[in-house]
Amino acid sequence: MFLNKDVNLDDVMQIIAEKLDAGGTVTFNPRGTSMLPMLRDGDDTVVLSKPKGRLHLFDLPLYRRKDGSYVLHRVVNFGGDGSYTMCGDNQFEVEKGITDENIVGVVTAFYRKGKPYKVNSLKYRAYLEFMFYSKPIRRVIVSIVVRTKNTFGKLKPKKGNKNEETS
Image (cartoon, rainbow, N blue to C red; front, side, top):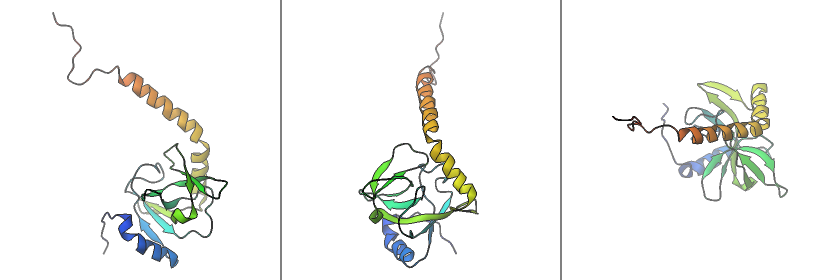
């Protein structure tokens, strides 16, 4: 029997750490939109394992920020001090200074609509290359879309406000 219940990661982190340290895996449904289009809020399931040594470019770790929040973002660069630079696939601002001590586990697979995807598959690697190297052009496109919405959004009359002349 499976129970679907939202839990606070702080409440189960000790159990998760013990399971990963023992060589097991942990599955959960991540929340949020920062990893779109790869991971859909609450719909997809990720499989976490303990990292085998240092993380690599494009690895997808679950880590804990200094403020105590947990985040699932991708390694996009490395600091000279050995730290990681992270960013969500659906974000443009990077987060620097993440260390191995912050890392809880790393995604080794994910499920969408019950279908498994391994992070070492050719299809997944192609997705990574596209998302990483298209980020500059995607940033420009998003900027244009936002500016267009801001410009033309101001020209629309508000609902219920008819701009008709009366005689």
